[in-house]
Image (cartoon, rainbow over all chains, first blue to last red; front, side):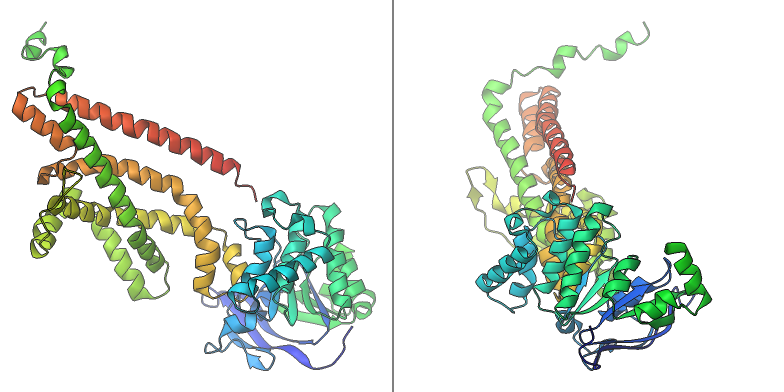
Amino acid sequence: MATSTEALISVQHLVKSYHNGAVLALNDCSIDVCRGEVVAVIGPSGSGKSTLLRSLNLLETPTSGAVYFDGVNLADPSVNIDRHRQKMGMVFQHFNLFPHKTVLQNITMAPVKLKKKTPSQAQAQAMALLERIGLSDKANEYPNMLSGGQKQRIAIVRALAMEPEVMLFDEPTSALDPEMVGEVLDLMRSLAKDGMTMAVVTHEMGFAREVADRVVFMANGAILEQGTPSQIFDAPKDPRLRDFLAKVL
Amino acid sequence: MWWSNLFTEMRPSDFLNFSFLPKYATAFVRGIEYTLLLAVFSVLLAVIPALTLALMRLSKNRLVKGISGAYIALFRSTPMLVQLSIIYYGLFYAISLPRVTLLGFVDISRFVPGVVALALNSSAYVAEIFRAGILAVDAGQNEAARSLGLSSWQSMRLVVLPQAIKNVLPALANELVTMVKESSICSVLGMAEMMFAAKTIAGSTGISLAPYTLAALVYFCINYPASKGIEAIERRMRRGDKH
C-alpha cells in the first residue's frame, strides 16, 4: 500500500564482508524502501537477507556503501546511530524479550529511558497496545510465562511503543510453532493496513504475496530480482528464483 | 612393626585435645568472627572494581582492555602472601592508619590492609566471573536493546548486567567461600583471625595440634554447608531459567 514514492530508506552499493574479504555476505546491494511500503525479502538461507535487514539499522556495520534513512547516511561513523534507531523498530526471530522484566516493563522501558514519554504516559500507551493485541491480562507476567506467539506479538508491540517510522522484521515467524504463526502474521497484516512502512525477511510466501507491495529475491549476497508479488511469484525471470520457488511453493 | 616407632611421640587423642577451650573459647570465637569479617568485607569491596575490570576487559579500546588484562594477570599469577606483604609493608607504610579498635577486637591498622589486599586479589578473580557472566547473556538481548535506540551503556546497565549478575551470584558466593579459606594467610601479618587464634593458643598452651584441628573443623563447618547451599540455589536457578 505505497502511499508516496519518497524513499524513507535508501541502500546504496552495500557490501559486507567477513574475515578481511574472505566471506562476502552482501555483494553490492542497492534497494529503496518508500514510506508506507511493505517490502518482503525472500531467498534461500545464507543468501544475506538477514544481513541486509540488520544493516538497515546498523546492527551489522557495512564494509562499504551507504544506508540513507530520512536523508542521513547511517553508515557514517559520525552519525548518532542511537537517535535514528529510535525511529526504526526491529523484530527478531527469537523475540529477544527481556526475561528479567515484566511484559509492561519490556514495553515501557525504552520510551521512558529515552525520555520520549513520562512513566504514566508510557504505561497508558503500553496498555492500549496490549489491548489491541488482546494480551492486556499479561501485562504483569514475565516473558517465560508466555507462548511463542504471544512473545513475538509483545516484541512487535515493544518496538511500536517507540512510534517508529519503519518496522524491520527478521524472520519473525521462523521460531514459532506452526499454530502460532497465524496470530503473528495477522498482527503484521494489520500494521501494514495502517500504513506502516515495513521490511520483512520471511519464509512465509503466502504472506509475502498477500501483504507485500514489493518482493525482493536474494541469493549469494546479491539482489537478483524484485517486483510486485505477481511479477515475482507468477512470472519469475531469474533461473535461481524459479528454482527457489519450485522448492518452496 | 617397622613403622610403630614413627608415631611414639603422638597419640590420636592429641588431635582432639580440646582442653584449652574453657580458657580460650572467647579468643577462638573472635578469630572466627574476624575471619568472617575479612571474607565478607573483601568480597563486597571487590565487587565494584571487579565489575569495572570486567567492563574494561570487554571494551573495544585496546589500552583500556590491556590495563585490565594486565591487572588480572598480575594478581592471578603471583602468590597471595607476596601481594599481602607488598600491600602491608609498602602501600600501608605510606598510608598511616589510626590505631583504632572496632568491636573490641578488630584493629583497624591491621584489618584495613588485610581487607584491601584480599579485595584487590579477589577483584581479579571476580572480574573474570563477571566477564563470563556478561558474555553468557544472549547477544540478542543487547541487540534488542540497541535496536530500540538505547545507548551501549544503557543496554549494558538495564538489560545485560541485571541478567549477568543473576547468573554469577552462585560464583560470587563461591568466591566468598574461597575468601574464608584464603584469609587465613592474614595470620602471617598478625591479623587476629581464626588461624592466628589457633597459632596463639598453640603457642601459649603448648597444645601444638588440637587448636589447628579445631580451626580445620570450623572452616569445614562454615564452607561445606555454604557450598552445598550454593549448589542447591544454582540448581533451582537453572530450573527457572527457561525463557
